Length: 507
Image (cartoon, rainbow, N blue to C red; front, side):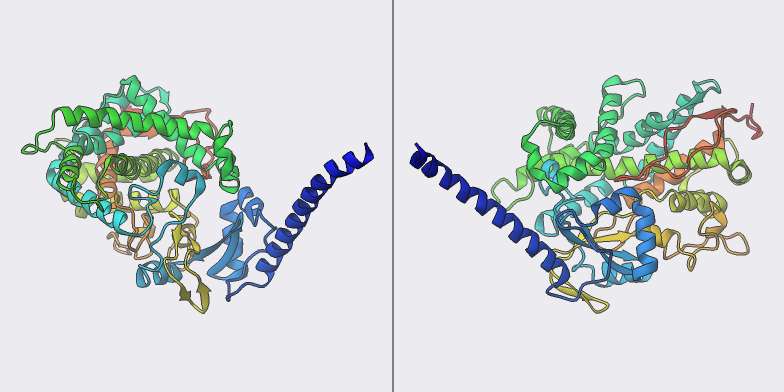
């Protein structure tokens, strides 16, 4: 019996010994690779084996990056898990990398939780290459064909802004949380271009869709997603991360339903919207084996347009309502400028922008202080390159700390305050600032920038022409720190939306 036991135990002992040896070897290799890199790497905090600086970043990323800049300079290095990530801070180095060396910094890293859903398709997270170039070029061209940059789309935004005003007025001066009403209004613009239709504010199905999109944005930046990125094999296991996939499937089902309806009524001689144009392009390229135009890429591209054309703009407007309720003197000055230069017989338009410098400055200041995408969208180095003496091998992940630019005391008169004077000269004229880059910069600048700028001006000026936004009595002081994630959102709040009469006074 002892002989049999010895035979059975010896293989188990060998396996156990091999596992222990392998674990020790990996640990030592991890330490050596950190301590003795193969290239001159930027300075940064000491990482822990396997988890890197994830614990440090999870606690307070804004504060951590600010401290890193003070200690290590404009180029530093952190480890997100086992992934070395270069952090660029300050306008000068970000411009040098993203603009002057645009191609080298035009890649996208593989982020497991996003790749699980996106599969490298669409526009926003697609790697730099043929598919990204074709999808982005086609999307921008088609959006222009269907009104982007033209009066026809501006008229649609103005009309939707009035729908939004009426929806907010329905509350009768009672405090409301404007989150999904604003979200619905902004999303209707991209929906009208992409799907050829808008959705009513009481459409429960569409409101549910907005809820799950918003929920997925939250989940993508939660602890659940961080654990997934460290251990992507858990995608095969049950857990809260599965909700991300379920939500994504539901969004794709919504797009798929509209896609099938469009195919049934498709007329190549009468293109109604972006979806029709994409269907036509797929038909044209059926015989091309290298075509990047197929159904899954269509769905992901639409999802990206929806996100780029809705989330950031809606979030900025919500920050705007919050700041207007906290700075009534700024709100009143905006309203009086609109009343004086535009009046009440028509809605403000882009043609009025030059005559509304304070309104434009206020919108830019909301974007600056709101800081919607504080870390930008991560980049990846597409080939071995050097930046200010440091070697960045192909595949290096790069984060651009946009907060460091938007709050830089060397570029702003009042970097730590909400003050539209940051965008005005001594004569009260609006001034463009080169360092104002809330949409990013370089080859991967946000594709929805032009649409977002137009929407923000039209929505904001019409809202302030018709309504006054008042912080409810007894609500205390709002937390203006917001919540950090893929986007920096204001925490849930309520505000009173009160109608103004034609004389510009609150009723």
